[in-house]
Image (cartoon, rainbow, N blue to C red):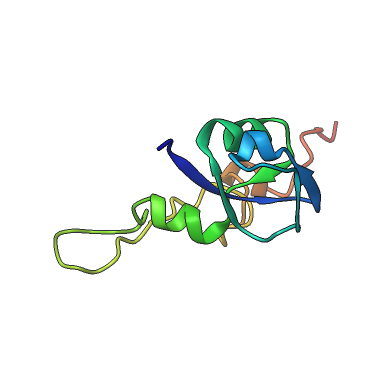
Length: 104
């Protein structure tokens, strides 16, 4: 038995029955997860016809914020250097109030 992968299609499509291990071609609705042979699933994903649904992604990957020390999730600390992070997004030399042109 070959390995299978759960995927969903971006749009309703007719899939190859031969590639899916069935006797006849069949219609698959969009955004409805189904199991497909791994090589066919990878092909559909690579060609942009399918994607791995979120529930499947989460079950296949370990949580990114998991901390084994105390059972609490790890926190990401901001350095305050980028725009949109509440730090003002500018360097101290940009806050002098001058435009860089001297008055002569």
